[in-house]
Length: 571
Ligand code: ATP
Ligand code: MG
Image (cartoon, rainbow, N blue to C red; front, side, top):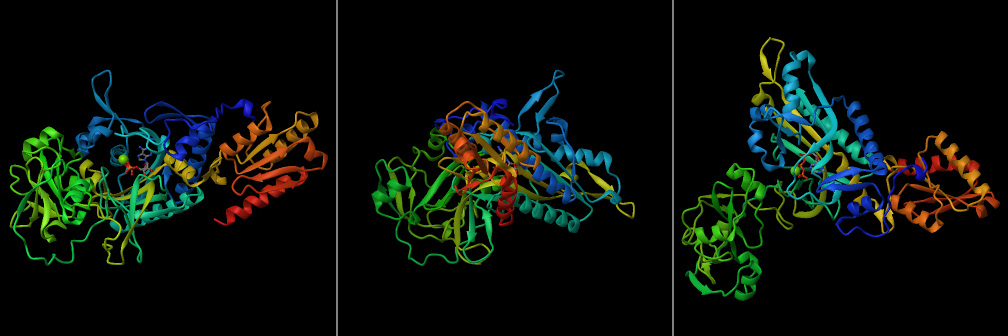
């Protein structure tokens, strides 16, 4: 393709709105443009990358025995009411009414729609196992859409749903998808790790997330330094403390702590470390207000808390609520004498002795407060995030943390959906049985963005060959007939040889073309100019290494093929 035939609106400057590298570079390389928060148009270059990722996914899904379907974006509320998710899904579900005032939503995921298909069309165990997949636009009204394609509201997803007659079959399908995901993300040029994950709004019994390791990732992964344990921090279990502190309890004392609202301020004022404090956080679920106690250096895990409370949304209570339930302004809440709301304590709290807590009075804390003697909780559970230095819950070492971008997610659903929607089949004895399900998602657009997070330098994107929008950026740098003819011949030759070539036919300075080529990030650049041609050569630059080779046009195709083969076989 010629540059003049494509809209590639490259930008020299970093767009102000973009925070992450992939977002910046996708905007700068003219791949995407924003239409509304979290809603983008894919321009030709961006779309080419997405199509490549899709193609890899298709090949691997097909070879793993899944069949492609395409479900609608809009689905009727009735299906969602059957599983209870019409209410449970919360505000991420974009709902609307049709002209007959019937409720619909834009699909954020498709368990209901596929389970409905299954129960209508599949009758017998002879038809199982089945695995359906689609690559389709999803809509989730994310609370904080950001980082470009990384967390969009409208985005491309591959979702697959498997149906089996028994657990063993379901596990086999799960394993097949797990293995396929390894191949897919490897082919996309990603460095990733599969970790244990929370099952979130989809539900089910077990799940793994595929995490691309990147500092800009929104997810925190904890992993054991010696064993195989790796999990999303959202889900990582924390063991209760091995033992209770041995210190003898001292008498409770109230102390004045003027303006000390944050843990840091209290620590500095009272000269105590964070692990000698217990934080009291007041949360509301919309229906109920609760207090949560955690050690000062620990963070509440809101996912664990939501599970305990059986709700999908919680938030820290506002100043008015805090004042109402504690009698003190924000910053001075504490468990001693706190009444009228349920108190949940993380299981690290009862093991502490002589701690600092808020006193439910302005500018006041208690020191040397003690569990049972001075305060208690209605429930004691695992409510905090795992953190570096904790023992691994598998008892196989100590935890470390790293950041990741979730690009894929596999779930064992069991009968959660088949039960709710009565999706059954007849077994060999003619008995009706519930199908055992699994579901498997890949963020197609997010994977493309994640690849940029891992493959770039200060000049632009460095596409892995299999998902590059073009393989070769062909750059004529002289205006002569001779260069034009040689460029055209090379173009024809490479395209006939199976390469996708972007021919920069613009009437621009060489420097401008080079900058754009580095920004757009095709794996190879071929520079054609009068000077080189006089010596019988063109210049090939490998975008990743920056290595330049002078080569005769007649040998170019062979040279590129050999280089691709060498680099691809290393992965
Ligand atoms: P997250 O925790 O990032 O919100 P999720 O757990 O809600 O993700 P799933 O429901 O498992 O995501 O969706 C399957 C895949 O779809 C995810 O692994 C991710 O790659 C992708 N995905 C989810 N939400 C978004 C989004 N808002 N924008 C782009 N891709 C997304
Ligand atoms: Mg989500």
